[in-house]
Amino acid sequence: MSKPYKTIVGLEVHVQLDTESKLFCSCSTKFGAAPNTQTCPVCTGTPGTLPVLNRLAFELSVKTAIALNCEIPHFTKWDRKNYYYPDLPKGYQISQFDLPLSRNGYLQISDPKHEIEAKRIRIIRAHLEEDTGKSMHDELSGRADSRIDLNRCGTPLLEIVSEPDIRSPEEAKAYLTELKLLLNYIGISDCNMQEGSLRVDANINLHIDTQDGKIATPIVELKNLNSFRAVERALEYEKVRQYEEWQETGHKMGDVPKTTRGWDEQAQVTREQRSKEESSDYRYFPDPDLIPVTMTEDAIEEIRQSLGELPAALRTRLEETWKITPYDSGVLVNQGRELVDYFISVAEICKDGKQASNWTQQDVLRFLNENQISIDKFPISASSLAELISKIRVGELPSNRGREVFEKMASAKVSVREAMKALGIEKLDDSDLTALCAELVATNPRVVKDVVAGQLKAVGALIGQAKKKNPNAPPDQVREICLKLIQGKDTKRPNNPAKSDVLQFLKDHKISAKQFQIDSQLNLLCAELVATNTRIVDDIKDGQMGAIDALIEQAQKRISNVDPDSVRDICLKLIWKL
Ligand SMILES: [Zn+2]
Image (cartoon, rainbow, N blue to C red; front, top):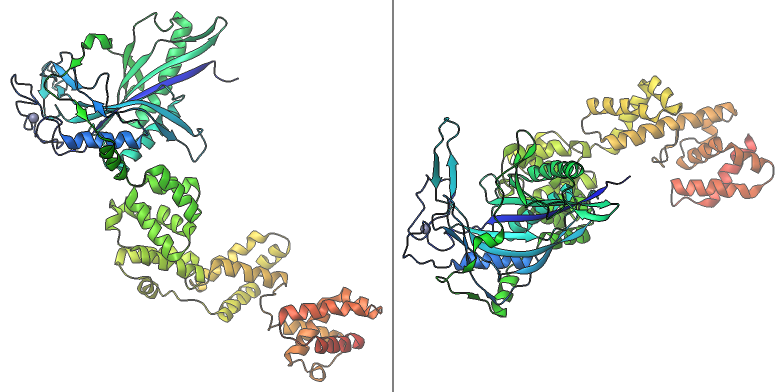
């Protein structure tokens, strides 16, 4: 049975915009400075000072809103949100109330693993406001005093509010992941959650089907969610807790005021915090110190043009152009534009999107992670990696040694050619490879026996031995040749029939090899065909002369320009002698 309730979630995401200075003054926004060293009379709220809008912060906000498919009104204004809190010295926060800079957008979410269905999460609005300072409670030293750091006070903060369209913790995570990726791609924020550049509050309640119809439980706002994982876990915990609470109390929406709960990471539970003030308590009114902002259609269009390719469009392009799966395009795009550009260069040069994607995702990413570097510091150029992939494809480099070459190229900063030389890798001659396989087959009777008995896996032992004897022996080919040798189906060597077998055949039938001119290649081939096609030979002996065509056809497969009449003559001569 499915769950007796539906989980309803809406998210409020606060993003610190990547500007040098604050929203209404010229103080620096740099993270990590000593407390209260990045303040001025404007952001600390000294009476008589006047705020001046940071135009860049406004434009970055509009850029984000356009990327979120929002409508951008031509007129927007600033409002004072009045409340008193120690980290807000003015006694009000400059924000946007009824005329935000954007509204009615959406963000498409999807999951290449198909754990959630693709859907649109609608965006109610994205508006700009100033951040507050930070309270530092000195609980560690056991003292009760709190200190205030106002460095963050006045930093531009974009609040993105979703409709309650999210139906599960997994969907919440997918929404946040896609949103963060989008913000990274358009370059408006570093989205560093540890430094508080991206903060999430979640509103959650349940819709429950009861005998008296559908009811909604009271909405709970979850705070203090410091990672996407915390969001997911807190929602997971909270939906169960709310259902249990409803079973116990029967409380519906409106029966009790909206409550705020914080996520306790250590205990993995949510805990009730102070009850939240309702929006009417803030006594919003237009800020008389700031003029409203007007935007022309041209200005909006100019920002739209500056967006560049967004993650969703980029994923589609990679899948269509390079024939890679949605999962692969997702992994690549999530790593950022620079890595995608590297992948595209590799794919364009080696003309193999799948291999370019595999190498970039596995080997390149592993090297970057292990060495804690970004792609611009990666020692193998796109053209060198493309060359490596091409060499494997044409067989100049055995596939099993590709990774060794890759690592040599990265560690010694050398070309493919130099790395192969340093590792003693060269292409093994076909005849050498065949000789090696023949030797292995001859000296491993037990493996041969197992393979003949149908245990094809047993041939793995020969591959291991081949690698020891000659590291350049390509495993795939060793497997193929050994199996064919063992199963006596070696059609890969058309000009080289199994002479010893034919000799035995002639001997068995008392035909002199010398008389038959066994050294003539054509005679040898015909003898082999006659020796190995007993049913056809029997048919011919029974007078069905047409059956000889089957032998001629086989001969033509072995030696393309063979003369059919000669084959017919030699085979018939042999068959009559039997
Ligand atoms: Zn300031």
